[in-house]
Image 1 (cartoon, rainbow, N blue to C red):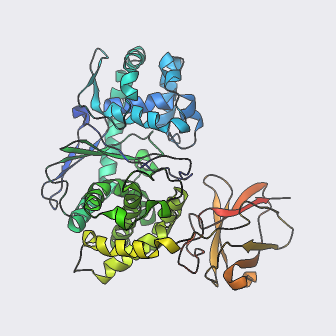
Image 2 (tube, rainbow, N blue to C red; image 1 turned 90 degrees about the vertical axis):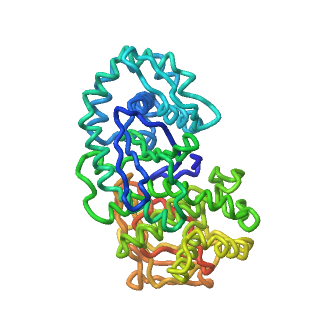
Image 3 (cartoon, helix red, strand yellow; image 1 turned 180 degrees about the horizontal axis):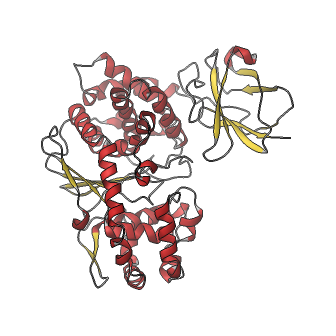
Length: 474
């Protein structure tokens, strides 16, 4: 995946691969996947790279690149505070615009070891991009690690690291994911090492790469309950959190089928992409649509009672990344899957899904809220909300909206006939009444996380995610 200005505010998703730190190697053999090995790893030099980035101004001030809401982060900041003025920290103070350097520095660290003399050694030729940001600063990194006695810090937390890797293996349905993907796509990773590389500081971006011909790795975030050692508290949380790993692991199965399917003849990436940053990458746009759609089928298999809601949340997320027909594409794949269940595997559905994309893509349009970002002031009585859309919408008798008060504080409100909900103009205009909290300033959002009843066009395309109004209290 590629990080762009369109990346979502909740979770910015990206993919990668890596090397194994033998001291932290933790393997599990899956009996139902032909002896394949999944290694969940917490490598020493990878952690060093994440700590260094967390100490930069960008790492400290950006909300999404570095996770900060846990005790180990506070311990790290306290320990390394005397070394924050080291010249390395300013040298690698990347930015959102320099995302490729940021990821290269973080990810390439995986193929390095650090000996007792604080000398770094590259043990594999892998590099995540065409640049070698970690190699570039090797001398400064060695000096920082030695002066801060990084090894002492790392070694003193090994029990904590094991708690995280054990929790990850226990909670993330790793055997189930591999078994499902092998069944639906074939045993493409047979004979290859597969590593999941983690640090609790890695937050917003994921990466999937082949380290070499026999080695694949995913660099993914770790869910907060795993970091805290509590585990997922309910199935809804589990169903939500496993998405990040599944849609990276999935690339190792989806991409090889895509390469054999002449996708570009029937899937015009320009018509499906809205500044995601993937366009121009050959089949990359299609692969993003497919990997997220396949998750819907897996999620439905293991969490049938809640999967529809969770899947919808993630399609809203994908919408904000620039994959604006994510929900439509996934619904079609699921329809084909159920129609052919027991007869065809997902990989066998490529011809049908591509015929469908070729048939509909020239008539695709994304419905927009025309008064998006308008400001309304809360009245003492019911507020009358009037909305206009760029094309006819399904005249739903009820839908949900989200009152977003803060990063993690929101309220979902159902709007129905009790709110005097009225559609006019063949579904292009909507009015309703709603009592709004007199808080200082917040957002009224349509089609965002928590919504179970979305607004959709008559063509079956979801309204642009996060459309809405700015609300100002009295």
